[in-house]
Image (cartoon, rainbow, N blue to C red; front, side, top):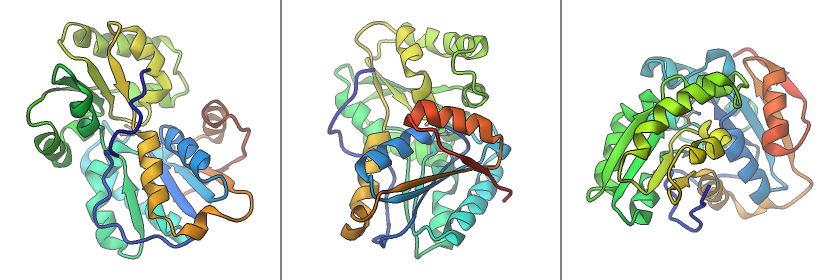
Length: 279
Ligand code: DGL
C-alpha cells in the first residue's frame, strides 16, 4: 500500500468539546477498528483504551440505518458508563448513520468519527479520478453524498459498495476463498477505470489491503485514514492525558472472544485477553 502521509485528516470532528483526561473508548462493528486502536496506542502509549467490537450484531454495513443507530447508541452508553469521555467511532458506517444522534444524546462527550478519505484522495489524485470501497450503507448515506459534494466537486468518484466483504473478513477469513471471490468481484471493475487512488472506506479493509493492491494495476495508491483519525483524537485530549503510567488496552466483544483475540494479536502484535459482554 502506498501511504499518503501528512494529508489533512478526513474524519468527521465537527462540534467536539475538549476531552478530559480519562478513558478513551473506541468501537466498531467488529475487528475493523483495531487499525485505529493500534494507531491510537502508538500515538498515546500512556492512555487507557477500551475497545468494543459489536460483533454479535455485525455486520453494520449491510443492514438498515436504524439497526446501526440503535447498536451505536447501546455501545456508546456502555462506553460512557465505563468512564469514556472521548469516543472514537472506528467505523465508517456507524459514523455515517449515527454520529449526529450520538452527539445530540451525549453533549459532554467528544466524538471522533471515521469517514472515507474522499478529501485527501481528491487532492492526491493526479487524474482527478478516485474509487471509494465502502459498505453499501456508508455509500448510500447523506453524509457520504455531502462529503463528495464538498470535497471532490472536480473529481470523478466511483463508489464501490462491497456487500459481504466486511462480514467475510470479520469471520476471520482474511485469507479465505470467500474473501478472494469478493475481492475479485469488487476489484475487477477498478482495474478497467482510469483511476489512480482507491479509498479504503471501511475499517475492515486494511486487513486485506495487500490483497486489494495485488488486484489493481501498479501505481494505484490505497488510502486508509486510521493514522489521521488517531491524530485528531490526540489533538482533542487534554495535554495531561498523554502522560502518566503505562497505558492499558481492554478488549470487549458482544461476539466471539477468540476471534477478536486472534485478530488483535495480528493487528496489535499483542496477546490480550478479551471480555465477552452483553449490551
Ligand atoms: N468497519 C465498518 C466500517 O468502517 C463496517 C463493517 C460492517 O459492515 O459491519 O464501515
